[in-house]
Length: 169
Image 1 (cartoon, helix red, strand yellow):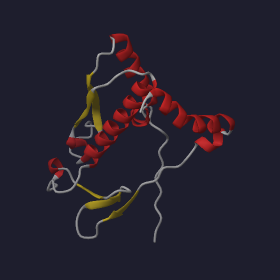
Image 2: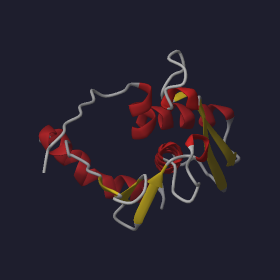
Image 3: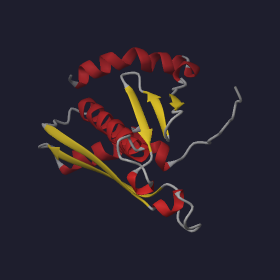
Image 4: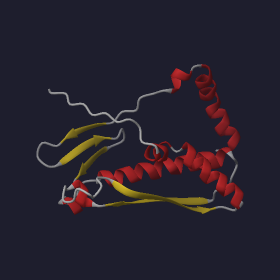
């Protein structure tokens, strides 16, 4: 896809959202079922069933997915798609690219071993390895705009208001 095709594809959406801002707000949803027999949650991804469980560093078997890994995978997916869309829009040629995310966790926090240990990632690093002949100025613009428009990156950088509800069934 080239920049003209991308613009043409997105133009009706941009026009609609400019004239009717409320139509741009949608609610994404995820659904999971708690496993009755083991410590796991079955998440319906829309394409397959993903079973998340305890990380081996907290006693898990490693047979199930780790939700921390899934968070990093979501960041990689979003950043990769965003980078490619920005490169396409700016006509920056990319021959190939690899996106990597890694994050540091201190499992003492989630296991309640040390009150001073955070629950969650201390640091997350996102790296792009790009095969491109683009100038440094183009690459700088590409990274700046990828950071600005990547939904997962921005959600992590500026956390939204969170809520938790329990419904008894």
